Image (cartoon, rainbow, N blue to C red; front, top):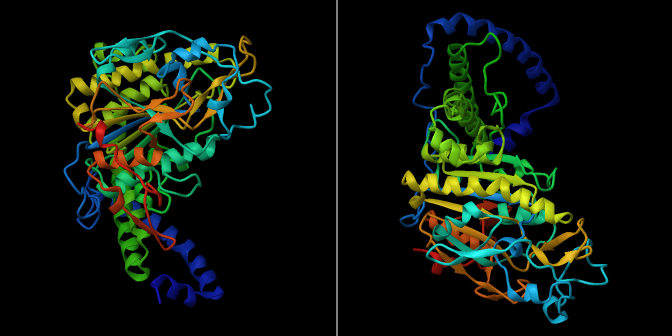
Length: 495
């Protein structure tokens, strides 16, 4: 019998109530003893050698030499319009205001927001664009700063997904499954490769609200959750302002030496309990407490950007000094990456342009254009881009036809999962290239289809991980980020 089951069989109602009653007195005694012994402890004393400091990942990983040591995922929540920003086609202008040909639309699934329309009128891109850099990649004029980085981008135009509603789609993109409860990309990276900084988590997430659709689609913490993986691998969310990690500061009247003494005693008790019942989560809790203690010193230093040069701050744009903005989060992301954080993910809300796309989309682009180009250039100048994989992703694209009247200022574009665009940079990916093509209306994949499972497999490959061998036993299955269906690394985009 498993130790946990054995304990449960022996725990009677009388025993439970007795332990609970005695525990109140034990807590009071512990608080009295703590204050008497705290003065004999060094204020910044290190934990004993039995406390796990650095999560080193799994034995045998990486499977092969990695192209990337770390990942920055810039997630654009709401469904970015690939047609307006990355995939303009002459037919979209030729057919402007006309019905999308039935042969193009086919019988593929559409959402209830446009399924009842009498007409599916083709809507051309909002703005002009141009071929950029030596590579000649086409980017919209709504992204003038990103245009200057074209030669570093690998634009995948043939990504596709089965999900066309937000929650399943964003869950699918971030966890490899449309159902909640599965581990996120960053948690998988933490589980497999561990951390390169013992004073910060291996996986950190930040959320910002854009000036497009406000409020944007909700962002749930399970998108950076550990799912079925040990809880020490869940992402830690940084909040804007003076208290970026809730409950990290000591309570009033508790000094650092007292905290250290309490953690030492608590660790001893938890280790004894783990030996007794064999519960791995007890040891994960020890790790969490120890990391939180070290973060009390490392997080304030991280958040203090006063040492950044005026030139660097100006490069990220005017919002860089606004806590919680996309620009401020991009700067923090670079600081995290250079400190050895394995996986940093920014979620930027506001891309769900069902209505007023003519107003919302340019505003949303202004949020992200300059900071995105700045963090790419900043990483490159510091020699970090070559081993940092940057992923600029979204949950699906938008339709070639208009939601609402073609000339109606309140109209927009509906969800579209059959083809959309993401781009990668750095981390062993070839810059200045396009992969995959769409049809004349950017409505269906024409060549080199890339399913999001393939994208996940490629991200893991860049980290030196073979997705077919990277599993965790869950519900009787060897579960993978890439799921049970075939997933193929897109080798042609790798350097």
